[in-house]
Image (cartoon, rainbow, N blue to C red; front, side, top):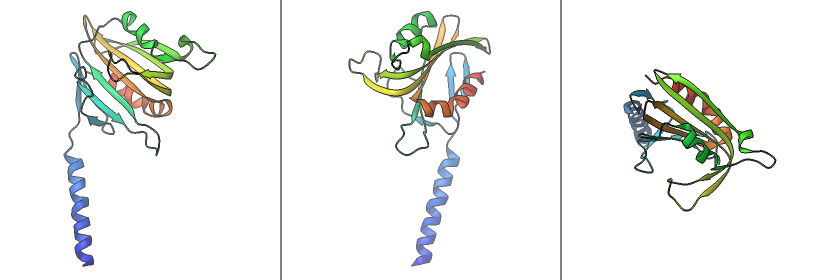
Length: 180
């Protein structure tokens, strides 16, 4: 009986390894550019039709929420239109202003301009833009990215507990900068 259990366990482990090996890398399009998502991110069914891709970024800690990356194409390419409304979704800690906790940067990737808004605080999360109800998520960090070329832009949002986003920030930034 013991050899049968060992064999069944062995088959289960081999089957699990085979499934993991069969997972294909996820290539995400940003307008005319594309980049392969990090293998540690778990691809999920997008929560809304506005998204083409959605990933769970593991916290790696018991009781700590995972982070999320979402991708939405066909977005307005103007940060001056989008950033103010995104800043309104962050409540900074007492004694600070949104400009104290939000950083705006810009750089070029393969002929496209990448506009970044990186903010921390209590995030007034909504499951979709027109939702009436919001959920307060304290100690969150949200990085909004607009990858724009001419009048075409893709919006990428990386959000989660501040420590989790910090832990995975380098991989996220490398992913955006790898777009070709």
